[in-house]
Image 1 (cartoon, one colour):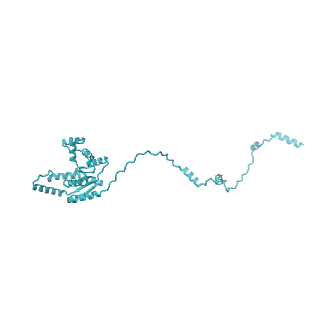
Image 2 (cartoon, helix red, strand yellow; image 1 turned 30 degrees about the horizontal axis):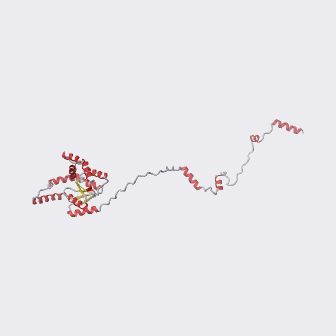
Length: 294
């Protein structure tokens, strides 16, 4: 389970985070603690953080995200984690999303503790009075002026995260002004109703694609017409007479099946000469005269 608790200073985020850690075995991640641990361990990220802290500058977003990325890979973060104090701005939320996506992880819920700032100031004043009455040392943040400045910073920088995570459908709002046990029960109910996330499907093995024949060309209009004609015609097997009759040309103006009368033409001179040559005209005339004399 991976959670983020949002809310202004004094909303009770620390109290609820400790309860969730004890109940679900989660790891509470505080960016300040992680920075100090990385510097102490002397990791590459810790050395970068040490240089920034020695200059008195705030750790850049990419550095904080790198520290979170290293921390959530350790065995004690196997069951999940709760981010405390991070992200504080929308750019930090974008950087966190990119890092989680690279690790194939995602947030289960972002719990917003909604409180009344005026009531928070009254709580601080009451706690200061009770602490002084007991003779105890005041905490550094037990100061109405300091709390007011922190509330302004939250309103300007961190409050836009509510809209950001609301658009991602992971925001769950809780009335932080209710008694602590009631706030805890409400958070439990919200976490129980969160939609189950499907486990990622295994990636299929790459197989060699079978050889495929090139697709046949689509028949043109003429081929479609020929196919339709061939379907309409009867089969030639066992019906040769009908096929021949269909193939024979029909005489114009005559009923089918009756032979047409063709008038024979007289042979021309050329044709007679081709059929058999006659004797020359002079010789023919002498033969006629001899016949008459006889």
